[in-house]
Length: 274
Image (cartoon, rainbow, N blue to C red):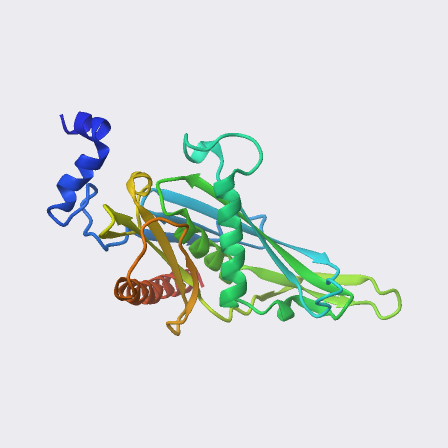
C-alpha cells in the first residue's frame, strides 16, 4: 500500500513524513547520510579514492602527465577535472557525449578547485615556461541517488591527498625530462574544501543531502563549499525558491560543521593505511 502511494503521489508521500519532522529514509531534516571513503582504489592511477554518500557512489582517479605550461601562466601547472554520469549509475542518464548535468558538475568542480585553492598550481611547475604537471582527474559516478556534487568534491579531495608524483628533473644539455619513478612525493594540499548541499521542499522546508527523489520534488537546491577556516569558497544555486539571509547564514554554519566532520573522516582514513 505504501509503495503504491509513493509511486502515485510522491509529493504527498514525502509531505506525510515531513509533517512529523522526518524523512522516508529515517533521517532528520538536516541530517546527512552515512559517508564512507576508501583511498587508493585504482592501482594504476597516481592517486585515487572512492566515496559513498548514502547510495550515491563516485570514484576518482588522478593521472599525472608532463606538459608545457601555458604562455599566460608559465610558472603554473594544470588540474583538469571531468565528471562522468554514465547510464550505469542511473536510468535518468543516457549514453553518448557528456550531458548537461555532467558538464555542469565538471564546471562546478573546476570552480571549487580554483576558488578554494585546494593546492597551488605553482607547485605543479617543474621548470618555468618549459615543463609542468597536468593532473587529469576523472570522476565517475557508479551509483546515483542524489547530491552528486558533494560526493564529487569529497572524492576529488581524497584522491588528491592520496596522489603522489615521481621526481622529475630536466637534462641541462638536451632539455629532456628525466623521471625517477622510484622517488615519489605527495601533493601539498593547501585547503580542504567540502561541499554541503541542501534542497528546499514546498518552498520553505530545508533538507540536507537530498536523495534523487527529493531533488526531483524540490523547489530549489543550494550547494555551499567551505574550508577548514570556515571560509565560504563557493555557492551554487541554480534558480528556484529564494532563501532569506537568515536561512542562508544558518546553512553556511551547517556547511562549516559538515566540513569539520568530513576533514576528520579523511584524516582518519589516511592514518589507518599509513
